[in-house]
Amino acid sequence: MLQFDSMMRQSSADSPTFSPLYRQIKSLILQALDNGEWRPGELIPSEMELASRFSVSQGTVRKAIDEMAAENLLVRRQGKGTYVASHSDPRAFFRFLRLVPLTGVIESPKSTPLECWRAKAGVEAARVLGLNAGDPIIVVRRLLEFSGKPVVVDEIYLPGEIFAGLSLEVLKESQASLYSLFEGKFGVRMIRAEERLRAVAAERASAELLKVPEGSPLLSVERISYTYGDRPVEWRRGLYSTVEHCYLNELG
Image 1 (tube, helix red, strand yellow):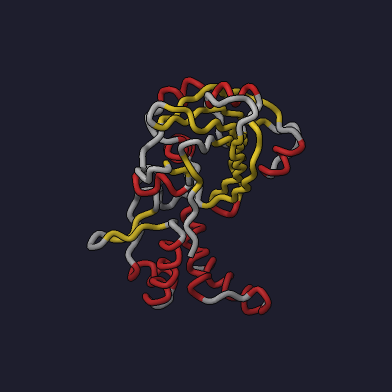
Image 2 (cartoon, rainbow, N blue to C red):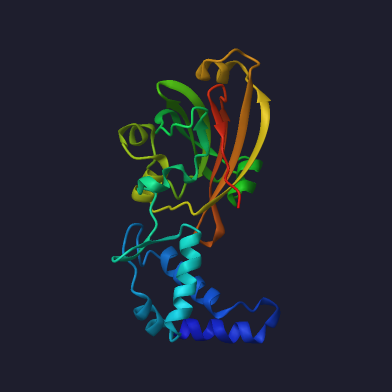
């Protein structure tokens, strides 16, 4: 309660940064999620309980939860309550994977880890991940196949301290998606991502992995993924073969 009162006083004293009450409640719920008070897949307290905890109306809590549900941070289940969203939920699988077959038939890919090694962050990786140059990072390379055909090759950079213990053996033994593994084993949930797309020509190594002629057009997708507190925890550079697939983004 003291934390909430402190936030109210700070907002009142600094009007340019004032936010609506439901947004302040949202921030407190996010803080609790970041602290691990409620884990992915777990039921959070009812709106009535949260309203009592924060000394606000149930409607204010409902508005905060509605916004968080729209942002895929929480999931409402009719007659059961509200749960923390989880990457292990099959409905969330394609939230961060926008590649779909031209036939329109959705299919789950097979992920094959190729390499996993420890390195020191260069200037660019340090900048993107909010690290210092020379800090430990982990680099993962993996291949995604659809219907037995290679379609995506990813190179993924992760903060070494957060993902200590990640190895090629761990990746090969896991039956979960990569983000489910990050969430379950390392307690890192990706809640949003930024992507930049451009066309590139396949160089020899990627052409061999994707089984396309060298020089073929590929879609380069660079992604920065963030966890709670808007902290970057993944920098991914992927090359997509679009011979039988396209990148789909729904707007509106």
